Length: 114
Length: 114
Image 1: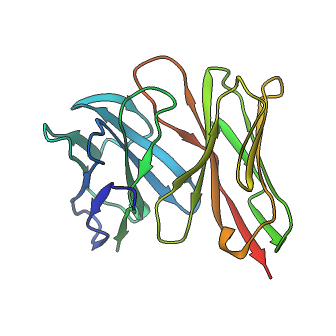
Image 2: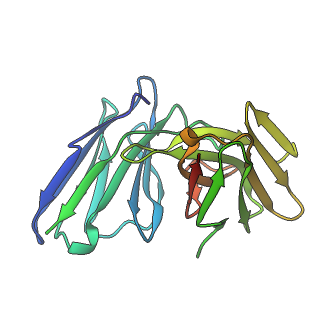
């Protein structure tokens, strides 16, 4: 158990809908990362927050948004969902925002868009 | 643009054999190179990591070899066991700045047979 908690574990929704994925980082970790894992794209970095502030942005679609709240939990919002958004979404956390900080991953949220 | 290239895509090794997975990178600003292990239905978990100031790091049966001039690093699993069957990802992160996101390779699915 990494200590990173993600909900829901599984989610099935229709195209055009909006979903919110939730993440609680490890106790004491200030950085939160979101990654998307699909069969053909591997682990793709979406976005990083550190203590509520956005620190890095990857290939995150405009239909997707994220935020980190004062209690350090984070949410990833996916809207106008398309079939191609079906993937495993991972949240990860680390204590800081320096290269070399160990990054711990949650068990992911499986999103299926039908 | 694939900043970290990983090979092979899949690997079958007999029990007791040596598993070798290779990665190459382009960005000389990378200064931290972890390997993650992922079992089906689970999130990636840190296995072992190295900085470019050393050429080798060993932890139990797992060894990272690092060649800074060639911009390559590899994971060796000695005495491979069926329990090592998993997907392995190499990764890298950049020094400096205020972000610590990992850029992942495409993964290697390892199967250790009896």
